[in-house]
Length: 449
Ligand code: HSE
Image (cartoon, helix red, strand yellow):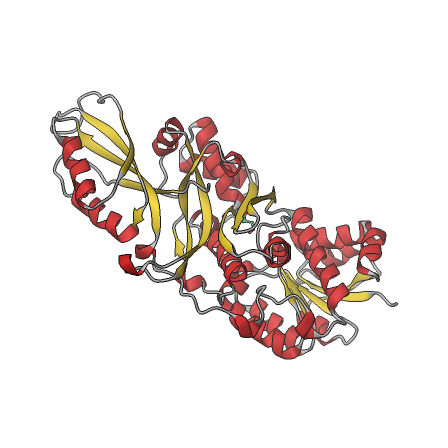
């Protein structure tokens, strides 16, 4: 059988990795796919550089539309990124009857509904294993390996840059800004690392995992997103003393409503720094590595660990998608694995809950005047709000400082689960106490048991 012909849009770090791995392992891949898979055409603005990378046997053009228009091309790989021209080209490739492979989480998290609908109408596949956690086959695991399960929750370290920064802050006691500079020097963070450090990249990935876990449409706009820019080295140290590590987690959870508490059924979808018990495997994922824990009702917890970025790790996921499509593209479209794991006519209308309705536990750090009765007032407010305290840590008072010359200290409180709105109200009340001397730090906590 003649090889499947692939057109590549954008030959940067991941594209060149895909080209090299496909060449290097072509025999092995052919034995798996049942026929050869060849990248025969590449579009890149830098034609000379691209031609040098792929050699003379491959056609290189500057116009991506020439790849889409080529009737010999069966699959288009989109590695341009972003929501702009990438979206136009993906939709044009689908309209031309091409299957699409993409690593573009931003595009799918924001425009996935439109793109998957267009692909279904045209009977082509849009595969995106590389879009979430790079080389880790988490899409495959959620969509196929765990199909027996009612998924309860997914929690992952799905941004390597921020995990590297947090690891450096903990290991070396560095401040955020210093650790970020280090990440940039090592090439982990982008020149503009905003999407990484503000949690947006992780939220794109969590959005896709939520859809596949629960069979809901992609809804990035409903995700709660909080990055790591406000994290202080002190909180990382205190968390450690309490037996926790702080990780930036992408979390999506099914919430069973409770009418007595006026809670509706829904889905939590959130990215924020999180205290995780140090004894959990995921708490020990260090540096730029990624890991995802999935909890299913039948299987319990499963953990997936590996490189979430980089040339060949991400290429590994891109090529797995090429093999899947090669195996399946002659199959009846209705019998293929659905884009979002559930059949399009069986999607759920479960709502994504607002952050105020999320239930979790908390780490609070309060800078207080070291005076009689301060702790009583603070714990009194929590008790009034029905928030149960799990642990309290009080540091020795610092040297006399501030204009008031009153000794100050940090009080750290761990709470049991409560509703976010309730915690917001309690924090506002505590913040108003004259003996609370600075902004209260709140970090959410997940036991992941
Ligand atoms: N910038 C991402 C990370 C990799 O640091 O994990 C691509 O999503």
